[in-house]
Image (cartoon, rainbow, N blue to C red):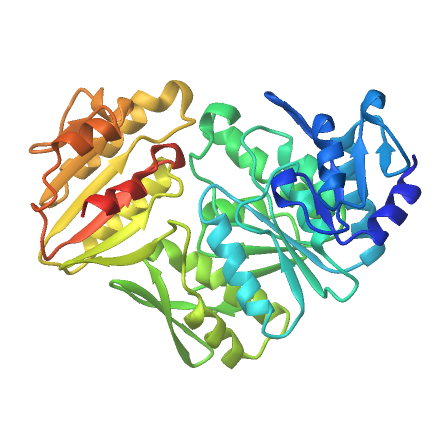
Length: 427
């Protein structure tokens, strides 16, 4: 079946599904494969559960004309998404970066949806499957698409750009996330900058942080840009007024009080303001969007537990985001300060060095309690004075005194695999 025929089937459906647990009436099911599953084997179940069509790539599963046989179901999903994107001809804003992608994407969506009908990446579905699904969620009345892109190897962002074909783009920052896959910090910069490469090749707009010297260097030879900074020489001036504890900024004479904690969230807010400014969203609407955005899903959430204030940032972690969160806690005005830090994953050969760096950094700050969880942290050579080390969450749970912390600000941060939000149950 060619792409035009597949597209006709898509238009007759209610949308795309790749998970039989989430089948909706009249959807089109794509039978994807993974290391431990074969979606073809679930095609019949998908149809019996209400799907209108099932796209398969193994002929033995085909039983009638509801089964659409293709050479590769994943490739067909990606080609269909690109075909749909071309038909819609709407502006696509893509973003990537080492830290803050999802928060920035949600802020941009909050701002732009004040004026436009938008569709944005759900959660962090930002890979070779999530990007096509985001595009296929867009409809003819969608006015702007917002697509988050993630990567842990070179050429991944370049490939995602061939699917989404963004004409506007923003990179949050260049940090040490996924250094195991990229191989080096220089490779991270090259990999994330594949978004800029695509935009240059297609005369797209690059939005960049004019206070970030790495960003300035990456766009130095390109003219179609839109910058934001605290400096009045940029296209949009956004000034940081305070970050103790919540970020408060100034933009066009308005003070905007966010629900986001930490100076590291300033650039995320400023980027959303700048993109709203570029698309001529009313400044009062921008203010409303930012002030009403509340983080969720373990990202910079502020949670009260008794007399304590918890900063729950347990969705992900890498050395740069970990240091930023620690520094933010250190700068807060508080009677007590406690850190619970979990292992950072995907650091490869640099894991021991980076975990020791974080431990050494914490040791220099005036925290009341330091709790370090995970195999990497428990293997550090120089242990901060008074710090407690735990090889696993189970080890921590057995020995932690739940009544020992009061009237404090508590930071909980670690990689997703550590699932440190479980600490909340013990506080």
